[in-house]
Every structure is written in C-alpha cells, then in structure tokens.
Length: 476
Image (cartoon, rainbow, N blue to C red):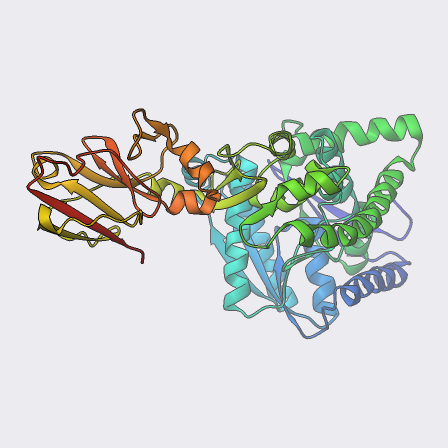
C-alpha cells in the first residue's frame, strides 16, 4: 500500500469491494492525466461534450471509471445495466452497487433483466454469445429511444491485447487481429489507451468504489486463461514490457489495416456491383490473390476464407452453390460470375404449385389458356407459347408449376431423348438469376414446358388431334 492511501476492505461470500477513504497525494495528477487521455480519444471519435451517450455499466472498475470520466467531461450519460442472473446473489449485488453509484453521480440508470438460458436455447449460442446478443440488442434499442450519439463501453488496453491473442489462435486475418477498435458503428471505446492499473488508480484518486466479478479468477473461459496464465508467463519470459509489446503490435496492424482497406476498396469496385453479382473470371485473371479479394467481399455475408478459396478453384464451373455459414445467403457460380441470393428466396423457389390447365392460370405465373379446334392450329417458334393435344392434356393428370431443381430433365420438341435442363440453360446462356426465375410446367412429375425457354415433345398436335390447348406465358 502506497503512503498517503487508506483503504477499507469489505469481504462478503462472493467478492471484495474496495472503497477509498482518503485520496493519495498524487490524486489530482492521476485524475487530470486520465481525463486528458479520454478527452483526446473522444475528440478523435468526434464525440463532443453535451452529446447523449449510453454507458454500459456493469459495476466493475472499467465501466465505473468510464461513467465517471464521461460525466465529468460534460456528456449527457444514461447508464445501462444488464442483469443476467448468472451469479446468484452476486448479480443482485452488482445491480445494487450501480444503483447507488448512479444516484451519487446524478446519472439516470436503466436496468434490464435477461433470460440467458432462453436465448441460448433459441439461438444455439454459448453463454458468452447469448449475453452479448442480448446486451447489444438492448443497447441498440436504448440508442434509438434516447436518440443517443453512441454506446460507450469500458474496454481497456488489456482487453484489446486479450482479444488479439484469442483471434490470433483462431487464425484470424488483419480484420480479426484488430477487431477491438476505438469506434465500431455506434460503439465507442474511450479507455483503450488506459491500462487496468491506471483505471484503478483513477478510481482510487476519485474515491469511487467498484465490484469484482468472482468468475474473473476462474480459467474455465479462454479469455480468463489468457489474462491469468498466458500474460503472466509472457511477462516472465520477455519481461514486464511483454503486454506493451502486444498492444504495440495491435497498433501497428491497425495502421497496416487502414492502408490495406483503402487499397482493397478500389479493387472491390472493379468486380462487385454492390448488390448481387461478382465477376469471378475477371478477378482470377487480374489478381495475384483472388481468393483474398473475394473473401473481403463475402466476409460480411458470413462466408469464410475456405469457401472463398473453393469458389476461386471452381471459377470456371456453373451451377455450383455455396451457402453462407449463417445459412442466410446462397452464392452460385454462373459462367464466370458469382450470384448472391437470399436463402429464403431459394427455399421459396423450391415450392411446387398445383395448377389446373383447363382454364387461365393467374398464380404463381400468368398463363392464358384456350381450347381450340385443330383447324385453327397455326404453331409458331416462340417458346412463350405451347401447344398440346387437348384430349391428352385434359385427361386425368397431376399438373404443377415450379422453379428449377438440380438434375431436372425434359424431352425438347423434336428430340428423342431427354436433356438436362442445366444444359438447356447453358445453350441459352442463362445467368444464375435467370435460372432462378425460370418456371417449368410439369405433368405427372415430368417437365413438359419451360415457358420462354423450350417446348417439349409432350402430347404433340398430330393427325389424330381433334382439338388443341394453346398456352401463352405472360411475364409479370
């Protein structure tokens, strides 16, 4: 204990609460330095004093210091505390502590109780991911409701180093290794330049108390193991500056990422229309690392690098589909292009629709139907029109309309054998989007007409025909 400091130590079954009874002699300098660092960080974020900020307040040292500094700097702070009820009475202790703190600081406090097991069951998430999902979903609601400028979280220097180590062991690239940034969307991290020790010194100087999560000492979670075991070992091997070296590395990578991102944006515009189509053939022809460029386009759509590499390896193929890791997007190779489609639309497209061809069809497509005497038969070559022997076609059959399915075949008019629809698509130079939009009329499970694409040999009008069906496809 340093001279000039006096602490009262209170012990419960779960935790320790540190309360500073008398500030140290250097309190003023500590407070001024901390405030100056945070003020500079906020200026870089262009978050001006007076702005409304949602402060994520757990009651731990980091969040307490963050709330205190932001309030002192003149921000309109609204504290938000999540009670996940995962640590029994300790969770209630944390809630009581933030209530007292906010009352003393004159800060408005919002508290929400969460059912973490229910979120885990519904989304298939781990405890950590379920808590994160619930927390940030609520923060976003508060951001809109309070018309706040930002959500402030108390991550500090060691948190950034821990995240770097976690992502390093996951094999992350530049983006992952620098993932804990000062600003990410509406989330700001004003304390990243401060160490845990500096934060605790500030709290001591300000006479503020905080709570300690008892699970921080447990090594069941990887982040805790890095903090409690890996970093002390690195300090033992490389000296007390080991953690500083990790943080400097993150800073160096952050600068490299900025240059990389700027150069990458010019490349992406060459190949991606920004909506649904990526020119894979041009990418392969012009880039020394086409898989990396493709991955940067597909990253936000939840495709991984292995998938990007596989797509590039099959760039000359058509009809091959890849599904994003979250299942939301389907990417299909089509004649040197990669076409992105909402997976929900793909599922919808797979649905069959029963129809009655004895009269006009209005849904899901528009087909005009008329029955005429054979004397009026005057066929044309337009595949938007189909002609069938009416007595054959109107006999008891099961008729349906649907989109393309892999492996579909039909017997084109004039042919003796069936052909793959994929080959018919290729001959017609159909892109992936056109393939998805194409409709097929089926009789008893067999494709008998591809409207606007190909007629079939089903129920042809011949010498024995007395009347015929004329079907006309009307594109919507």
